[in-house]
Image 1: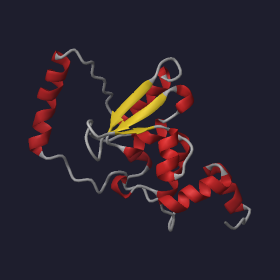
Image 2: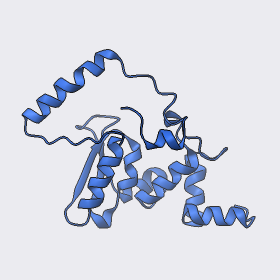
Image 3: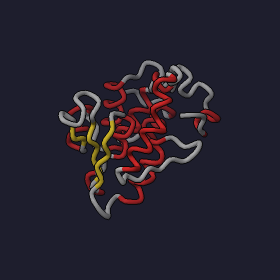
Length: 167
């Protein structure tokens, strides 16, 4: 954790998040040592969030071999791309044992969205209070999904709004 470029863009980014408890902070370095001792490579970049590092690695690997991202963070649903072989094993509700395999058909079933890109655009519209991102006032997940289904993309929604098109 720490300050990233997003904090420079929006000072409210993650402003509502509580600070990490000292008890947890003290566990990080020993855990890293254990993981590295098991032969797992760790990658972190100062000032860059783990999501961005994961997204970059997925982008560099996608299409050449299947990629499965294991996470409890819905933000990474934006990486889902069946054609490139990218899926997410979503662990937030039941841990790894009862994880959801998030692919494009899962996104359609759960949110009515056809792709990871559509999920990212829905997230922009609805915002994310836990990250301090406001979104568009009055638009939640369902309305955002409906707008994306009707207009196809965030860019098309903005163009329609500027043109005065009613939904």
